[in-house]
Amino acid sequence: MVAESEIKCVSNNKSFGGYQKVYEHFSNALQCTMKFGIYIPPSEQEDEKFPVLFYLSGLTCTEQNVITKAGFQKYAAQYKIIVVAPDTSPRNCNIPGENDTWNIGTGASMYVNATQEPWNKHYQMYTYITEELFQLIQNNFPVIKDKISITGHSMGGHGALLCSLLNPGKFKSVSALAPACNISNSPTLLPGLKTLIGEDKEILEKWDPTFLVKYYDGPEMQILIHVGTDDEFLKEDLLIDNFVKAANECKDNKIKIEFHLEEGHGHSYYFVSTFIEEHFKFHSSKLSS
Image (cartoon, rainbow, N blue to C red):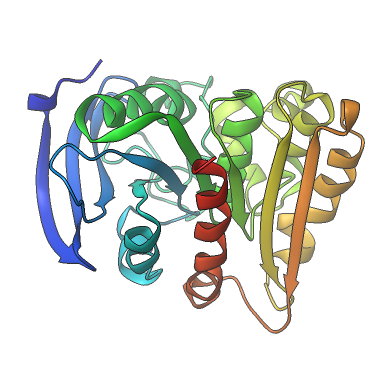
């Protein structure tokens, strides 16, 4: 458990009546200093509390990408939702090769818990997101504790699906923008995944939403997905069709996919910023119920 005194605000900017902040803290799960962005919407009274949306960013990103490029603060203020945007991996851990390749190591945590040495000392991002950071936000900010949702982009979309499928009921709603849905078959993401958890096919599948969704047995879940037709990763890396097919095989039809294929859009934050409002509308409808 992280006490309030152990987090430090490193930036604070007013935006749409609320405040976009960045904090840093030492993570016990990751054994390094981490940063996260958090947007606090404008409050009408001093003790007002808000629902929370976790946003997981993609490969190579930091917490800065979404807070500076997505333009979500307008909608977070409008719908009165706290938005938490963690960094995508541990950093500066002095692991040999951690900065050698863009899709392995720094910025490429895959949101899993590493089992391979020397990565396993630091790369425990699944635990960091679902336990340590989750609790830190509840302990230190004005949140409604049973109204937490999750979304993400690309590798972060994979992370959002992963965290929700492995924790039935923990998140009130889940969505994803251009998510990597079948990571164990992604030529771009698989090298990083194998670096962290090894080559065993059964273990790889335990961190793959397409395999997990078949056996999901929690509360009914609706998942909103947007992706562009011109996304360069659509056919080989995102493999959304595989996930949708597997979700349709889920026991008792508990997973409902709302899927939007958007003409002409690519993979970048031009795409994210275009459709981010739809995701706030979606999460607001679930968080307000």
